[in-house]
Length: 522
Image 1 (cartoon, rainbow, N blue to C red):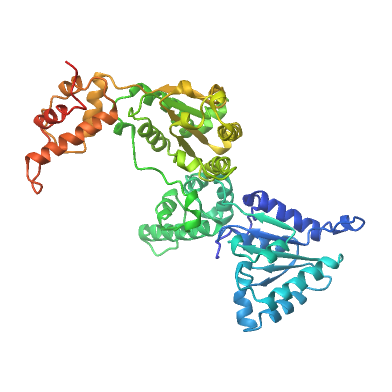
Image 2 (image 1 turned 45 degrees about the horizontal axis):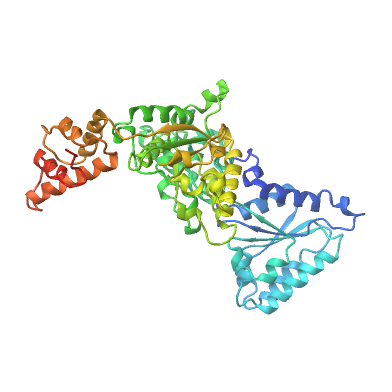
């Protein structure tokens, strides 16, 4: 992985989370403070297995720590063994491990150990050589050697090899803040335009690994150079400066691996406030409760205003709660993570709680993010009506919501329910879901607005009597009106040939209004 790094920017170990911090501690204990264990019955850590998605920086982190601590790395990979010791894998492992003996601090790095020792058909002689190396270094307390293995697929590693490591560390996908630290390291300051925002780029790179960020930076630099060259009319060399647009236009070129797509909370289709007919009061309240916080984070921090962690939309079915949630996400520039009951309820014991924890972990990795949970009453009813599974789910949700720090995580839980009185009151306490917004069936004027919004996407006669149609749909919801427009469109098709250009007319709405669903009581 080629990284366009600035030479004067320190490698951000902090960007690798708790796993990076712990690996740094292991290096410290093994190579700087080894004497601390001299009179103790325990040794300093001698080996560690590091897992993480492909490209997450396992190799970069390990080699950088070797450089920082003055440790000589001995990298053992299947490619190196095939090249230097063809057909002699066990001899290669033995020879390379023996080269690490002596007083010099050394790290033996088994790169992609799942390729060396797969879960099936492991080379017995190679495994024997590996075992001897591990045991030999554990028995010599004075030897300054650390054995590190890396893998992107822990399940594919031979079980005995896996269990021989004292410690397992897992590199997670970086959070937006961690991505920002990595981007600062990847980009040298002379590149940056004054208006360039590392945070804005980091927020857009959902589920990106270190390798993905390096590729994005490289392509952004290429784009910036082309832009600079095209505007440079002289032959004089012109400095290249990076803009946000150089990154944004290259985001779609980064292809995520299948095992990372669950973290790729892509922005939903463009649903704007103007695409949601009626509900002017609801839209204003959502603008104040959610959108303002995302758009003016610094201002709220200066004023010391704590935004709501959770907002509840409640009202009858079909009133547009889900559509409003999508519009909030788009207008605020946040990602939208819709969660269904089937994704939460699992058959295995404890898996449902883990599903909730994974949901919030995904949101943290893809923040700014709005988690949308529909039909909340089905999962989190009143405590005295819950079974044991429901109580465990409720406790897990409360733990996750209480742990949210809006300033750093920028996550909002947006819930929807048809029966707000069925929810456990503890969920609606201040600091949890504490902003309740009613989404009621539209008024006559709002029905006109909804009908016109829906009809704007189809050809229709300009002199339609929208007020008359609205008057004949009293009590109907937005979903009902959407169905009415659909039926009017079908009626227009029925009047004309399919290869023609039908236009929805008042007579088509009359046909649709005569169906039992829309017939008004006399």
